[in-house]
Length: 487
Ligand code: PLP
Picture 1: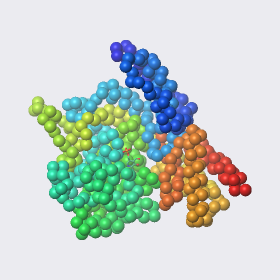
Picture 2: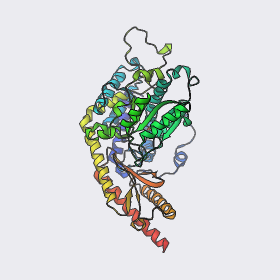
Picture 3: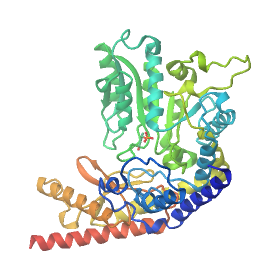
Picture 4: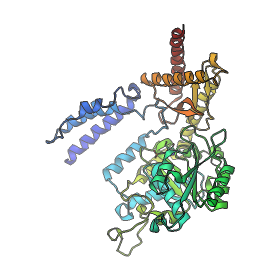
């Protein structure tokens, strides 16, 4: 593409993105399409001949832009937020233009060094001690996979060399509330799902450290080799917080690797007043935090911090001749030695731009706003006799269900419990069909539970108030329809 044409096309692409973000509230948050519909519209024989750029960009506007699920929409409340700031978009654009592949220092000196700088800026902002170092990965799943490869190495001393045949069967400990990526890491690392022991949780769905200690003792007696513990700060289902300090005590006594999954909630540690939830994480061997979830960094960016970079490297490094630097100079840090793959994006570029643009204070202010909005929503739910909250809301997620006042006290009856589950599922589907918001669900103690996760950089108070109003309106409508059905 000739330079002049590229420049004009980049401007056009910039307009597409800027128009999109300007008009975003006009889109149904979940696009009105059904599976296969887009394939029918867009598929055909492979393009044998080149097509004019203007046709391609026209189709991008007409077919691509409207048919994503609009994660950037301020009324996107599903799963966990993952929204991209304007400055992050610029960072992505620059990094894409440079096509920087930062696997060795020499394949992208500035990529490698900005990674070192921004990992340390984040570490300091999060209040963690200077002995934590780290690396950016694409996702928390890969950060945790790498951390648990290091835990495996730590437990066996030689798994990266000898595999697992030489050691007793390994055991990892976590709770049933842990993210599925932990069990998947165990599947990939040869530990297997049977090697993951789910430790009991208390009423707040937080891991019981006494049960953890007992499980380790039992397993040692039965011939297992305990390898590590994964504690979660902000579980995926309800944002429960494991007692990391007590778990760190167990790990210290047992000589086990402690990995803390704070993929979602971690950014809130930028706010000193939130650090109570993180007590003890400074004693972890490794920690994962996802800037692409609640730090407004465009997808993808996951931060793995560890106090044991050398073990991470032992677990994952393999330097073939063709990657060796032979000019005799200091080679700098070659980040591929700390991750499962070779090629990697230079995520330090966008992070450096973003941290400078917002400052830590700017990030804190935005996070605090989301925390306040979530607390206000939780209070509104608590004050409404037709709704009930099903979990504490320490971060930006509020878990609740519709429970018409007429059913209060009868939730334990099997027929009522089934009616409540069905009614809440219907309510969620009706809400999402409106296109005015998008939310997702979980089950809490078996009950169908609505989740509103606040953390999108574009979400304002009015969006949360509109969502809550709509929830109540549609619940009342459904209740009316149910009542007429019952008559
Ligand atoms: N850990 C927690 C606590 C999560 O909530 C999630 C995703 O929501 C993950 C890990 C996985 O994140 P990723 O999609 O970056 O692999």
